[in-house]
Amino acid sequence: MAFLRRYTPKGLFARTLLIIVLPVALMQVAVVWSFFEEHWETVTSRLSEGVAGDISMMTSLYEQESGDLLSFEQHAETAYETMQLSVNFWPEDSLPTSRRSSFFRTLDRTLRRALSDQIDNEFWFDTTRYPSYVDVRVEVDGGVLRFIAVRDRVFATTGHIFLLWIIGASTLLTTVSVVFIHNQVKPIKRLADAAEQFGRGQNVDNFRPGGATEVRQAAHAFLEMKSRLTRHIDQRTALLAGVSHDLRTPLTRLRLQLALMPESEETADAKRDITEMEEMLDEYLDFARGQATEATSRCDLTDLAKSVVDKAQTDARQIDFIADDNVVADLRPGTMRRCLTNLINNAISFGEHVSVSVRHNSGRVEVVVDDDGPGIPPEQYAEALKPFSRLDDSRNQNRKGVGLGLAIARDVARGHGGDLRLSESPLGGLRATVSLPG
Image (cartoon, rainbow, N blue to C red; front, top):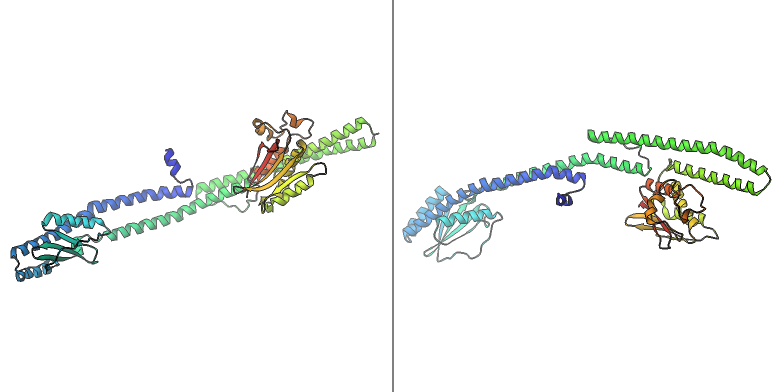
């Protein structure tokens, strides 16, 4: 079974076509084999034996006449009138040494067998020189007897008609099958494309269910799922936005009250706490907002990444930027900018040396962010990508945030049909790679 799975087609179209066409092809092969083996070859053998018997009789008559050509010519005329067999004596001639085989070797094999069974003399024949006749020559004393027999008397000539019907019917059936299967598979491909577009956050309002009943049911189920997910995202965003708004009001009052109070160490600490709370609220809202409703467009990823790097770059912290030419992808610029901002700020926060590169890789586009910070152990990569995850190592000491930066970045990457991978950086710290469809 593993062998069959390895070599059978993987696509639904090819598999369905194989299921329909293969049994028909096997049946046609069996019918053709049965026809030629049991019927056509049997009929041809009988015909060849009859002509071989006529040739044997004429050869015997020539030998009995002992060279009396006048009497033999009378027998030849009788053979032509009654058996449609033309007989001529070529004195002092010999049999040809070359042979030309028929395309259907069964014809030559059958005639040779019939002549060998009924004629003791040496013989030669050609089934290809004349379209409607067969040339047979028999060696006799004093020369060669040449026989010209009508092909219909030697072979069953309807075999090619049968083959044409078989090939024509198979071609017609295959064509109908290809058209039918293509029309059945097309709605499934449209459904798969719509699901992929929705997974990337793209608009799929123009999708309409079509195809067979089962495919329509799957399409309607997809549309219902899409509606539920959209409502869930909208409700989550509205909830977090409401919570953020409600919490910002008392925070604003607290900040105002602190501004009216005399400056002291305690008021400075309180102001920092309020600022940190506001940043946490912004991070929660970013995570809840996810892909939002931003439209997708074809963007130059190099320009977008360069703008993020320029904004993050300061006099105290330089960021190396390397980019390939013509790196474009279908993006939601705002959400992708948020993704890259989180990754670059994360690298700046933990490393002294940061590098950002934009490149092509095996048909995809990638943004790679490297830093020379303390890094993350490989066994904790999965944990680091979880929401609200704060690893208890050197990367989290005295750092702000609630552990949503990498989670938001991965959520954005996956929303674009890609992913975010963590690995060890050549600089010694952490490498974050955003891989997207090209």
